Amino acid sequence: MKKIGITTTVPIEVLYAAGYQVVDLNNLFIVSKEYEKYIEFAERDGFPKSMCAWIKGIYGACILNEIHEVVAVVEGDCSNTKALGEILSTHGIMLHPFSYPTAHTIEEVKKSLDEFMVHFEVSYEQVEEERQKLMTVRKLAKEIDRRTYEQNQVTGFENHILQLCMSDFDGNDTAYEAMLQNKLEEIKVRQPLKEQVRLAYIGVPPMTGDLFEFVEKQQCRIVYNEVQREFAFPKSEHQTNIYEQYYDYTYPYDVHTRLKEIKKQIELRQIDGIIHYTQAFCHRALNHLVFQKELELPIIQIEGDKLNKLDARTKLRLEAFVDMIRDLKDAKK
Ligand code: SF4
Image 1 (tube, rainbow, N blue to C red):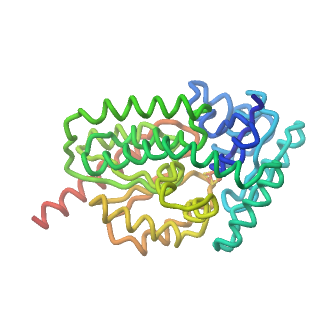
Image 2: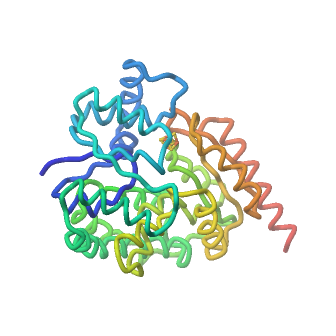
């Protein structure tokens, strides 16, 4: 089966209909034990130090894993992806453009998806068929997410990683569905986890995967992973077609679209505080100004760069943040 790399979540149903195996280059990069070699490779090729580590990692993962075709999201995801695509094309990599439209309307989303389908020479019916096939795996991920905040049986890291990998189903949707089914059976018989503080994680997925374990050691648990949940498309069973599904996907659109969903989930999941992760040299860091103003809960912004572990200063800040929330909760009692 021919492989295609993606730099962020894109309408995978179109790529499946066109007969591709889809590989999320972000996951290929970050789950590698040698993730640093991808960054170093990019820097040796001339990528500046002052550039987001995800972009460098994606570049390294793409070239070193010999991915020959890539979907480049030229609008709605990352301000660096267009330039990255241009560099990849100099290596002979075939680029397939996709845009999340600036105007967040169903008409514009439909136009963009229709262009994507024409580009890959697939019909709407073929795409819908793929969408229906993915419904089971999406429902399983949704149930695991629900058991994170309702039954309290799932750790923050499990919630993070199981939804994150929904962007490409870890390279094989059938195997991923079977894995999620087994995982769910195991989760169902667990005793509920008990924590003093319930946290939300918002922002791009972290470079620092140890964040979840670290907060759990402070008697806290992350019960909402904003962007990872979006990657899993939890509302797809209620959407009547592919256009609605990608219209309701909040991450690539404006910050206010994201904010609306974040507020809803904060209330539903009884969140006490928010961790906003931003990546060094990422334009999305500016979103913090809006979140800080609009979200009526304690919020901390932490930044990651190239390390895949939390640094000592961030750990200290997180400890102080959690203590402050605990004190606030005690004072309210
Ligand atoms: S973290 Fe920001 S700059 Fe880096 S790839 Fe993601 S959107 Fe782009």
